[in-house]
Length: 335
Image 1 (cartoon, one colour):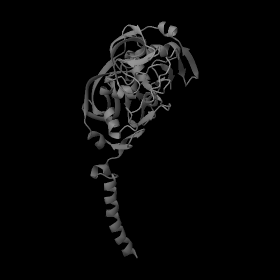
Image 2 (cartoon, helix red, strand yellow; image 1 turned 90 degrees about the vertical axis):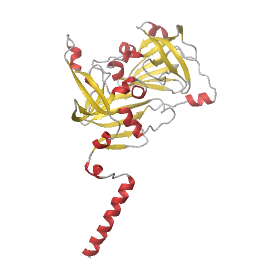
Image 3 (cartoon, rainbow, N blue to C red; image 1 turned 60 degrees about the vertical axis):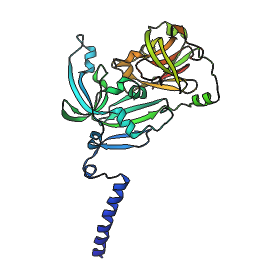
Image 4 (cartoon, rainbow, N blue to C red; image 1 turned 135 degrees about the vertical axis):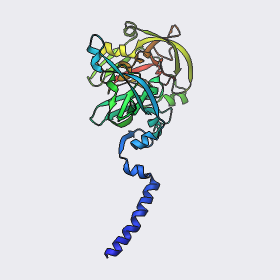
């Protein structure tokens, strides 16, 4: 009986290994020896569990001379001290593209990403800052710091302070805001929605909300964006325009108690009455050098917005495409 058992085991083991190789569970010696260090999950086509060797096999990206300024420097009169470091790793957007976005219609509005370290620290990123903005071209999952191996570290080269530099990052989760999206149906059925005359600003954590009217926006400081690419109603190029509006960060600080530094795990959802929406992260609004490019605009090409745009629309001058131009703002929600 022992001899039969040993014979069966000698036959079954190679067969099981062969099945595992073809199923992708084992990909060779490196996969057998390398433990997963990064998981990518959530609203993706393929959940990934990547070893360091898997990550290094992807196209490498090098960020030289990144200023590293502690969040504590915000409270120091002389601005504190800064160091510089160079990082090598993989762009976060390349990792996400490897996993694939689950929602295919322009990847669907309302998508955002959460990154978590092994010690529980968490930070959030908007889809737009990763894929539309130049922020995404400096958002790195680094495995080398100054040419030496380092724990997987999330680095944002355009941030002012190091609050989103997440050492020991282990989980990347893609999520999507659950709003009923009617914009595509409206377009197919040629539905024209009435212009907006106000919107609601809500802080879900504090349970507060405010009604914001045109006069309220006009009372706040504005910025001028000279060349903004606009794409509205989910599809189609709507030209390059000048916009004047209130920076989203200014609007939020006027109504909400935003601490300094801001809570980088929070996101902002700007939505229209047809469900089309865009996300912005607290990190890009309150810590990025490009944060004031995200606005709630009231004037386009020197004139008030048209009825089709409503009295207010969102836009981001830094974005290379206008996927975050939400017309007829109905609600701005901080989550």
